Length: 343
Image (tube, rainbow, N blue to C red; front, top):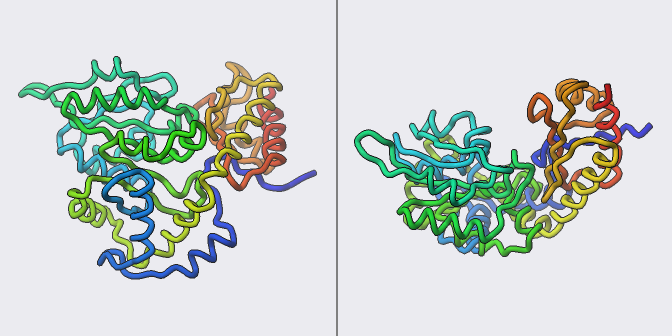
């Protein structure tokens, strides 16, 4: 029996390969709190250029990158509007409320993708009795939506609505690389739509850590202070930034392979009779039937076969393909999931 471990819990479980490790070991470094790490600066300049923004700031985590952006866009006591299943409200430990005193106003959207007409009804003008909206956020791709991709024309419509209302628009673009790979939309075409944008290096791109937040250049001093205030003032961070630079050079184009693996999982699982959301990118959602083992039991059974998947709800599984899982691994995982899901 093949006992190779297959980990489909997330694309964050990827490990840097020998070439990325070599790039990190040989990185030219300095003290980034003083703005003196040349590799961090190179990464920030590279990401800013890719998305057509004037300023980019390296952050150790995606949560910190998002929080820097939204706290610069929403005053304490102000309002952030976004989808109810967005990562910012579902997976960031209420950081916006805890750290920033920010109120969130949400709506459930099909596969997490806001509709401009629904959004128009959510945006509020403040008065002595009502909190006004300061910022709208979208997520590209949408994690809990199963890696769903906003069509470019919908993002344009949202941008026009938000800016026409005198508000700012943020994008949690942790997996925007996957949207780019799936649709061919240039990164700059995405970047020009948003006032602020966060992108992750440690998911599909396979770097060991790090995100980048893109902001108007006039926010630089405030953004650096915010990062430092949240404990994100790293020193010789070029060791991490070098992994990100390597990922940008080598791992963007190969994301289509992860999407192909997700399609293979979808086909194998649907052919076996399971209910599966058709993937657009690298995330596969599996709905378990009303009877039979729940997700906790399925996760445990899969783990016993050296296959790891995520429980995303009482009867919902999430599988995420990435550079450390090949076609054979996906086939073995699918077989284990089918066995585990049976009564």
